[in-house]
Image (cartoon, rainbow, N blue to C red):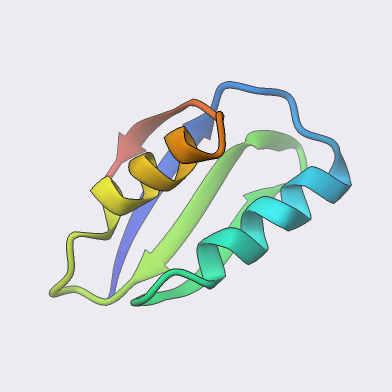
Length: 73
């Protein structure tokens, strides 16, 4: 498994964070999504090692009108 940490530019409420988590979990090869309760802009995504999920995450966010920066991969 690989992980990528991203920073979400927008401030999202609890419902929208849940929507984002569901959106990420619906993507192929994504197995887990976690948010830091103290830093809700930070999201950690766990995915299959042999797939280019980080670029798919960026594209999915852009399609939803959201902005993010990849902090670590």
